Length: 314
Image 1 (tube, one colour):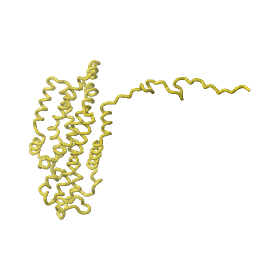
Image 2 (cartoon, rainbow, N blue to C red):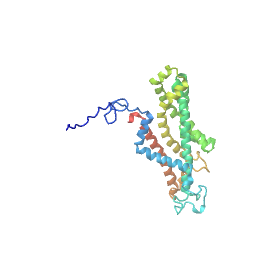
Image 3 (cartoon, rainbow, N blue to C red):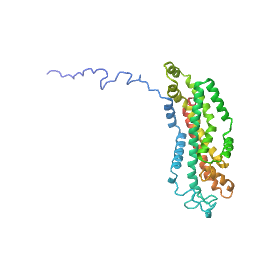
Image 4 (spheres, rainbow, N blue to C red):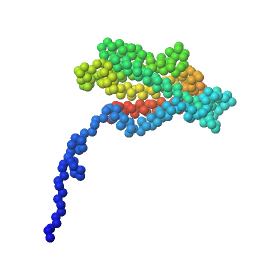
């Protein structure tokens, strides 16, 4: 009988299924990872930072109760009963009552709306003005830089708190719009200086010089090449300044020149409770604690964003 032999498998072509593929640009050790942008690296760092999550949750909670305070309380902050004046916590009123017999818990919840609104609106307006003046000064240079920088120095020399006391004492408006406008006018020079320095640094980069050599116009260079790369330090400063503006609004309201009743504000409640701190400390404790927690949340967020966007801290 003929000897049986095992069939010999045909040689498979290179790269076929079941064989080890040859290293190549698509699949192999020579494959290079796609480089990430500054914002991609920053987001990756933020996701690993627990401070970012803590501050983000607190800020999200504050924004929610600012928009829908009725989710946390059904009591009106204007419903007052002098029979409960300075009374401590009871059932249904966990924070007690103030001098007028108003529910402190309801006023603390509704007070977040004015403080958060003033802080966010002031920061946005100051950032827009500061980026406009600082960006134009840094990009054009020359007499534009001298003129805009001197205008900024005039406003920078006026302390925000002192300027707010003087001007709000004269205006006597006491509305959210008035306080936001005044603080933004006095607060934009700090952001303008940061924006000017960032634009001067960005316009000296090779990609901007290449765009200029290829005939890119001024609007295109500002919007497509310089602005995205100069926003990082502005965002850091603006985020930290937001908490400062909230505390500044509370200070002005505490001094009686900021927001005025019937607006519900933590600063107003702290001012009215300051004289009763020995007899009814709960009137001061809760609005002051809410204010401190809010300012701390925004400062923590600013620190986390700074650590993520500053390559020197990595």
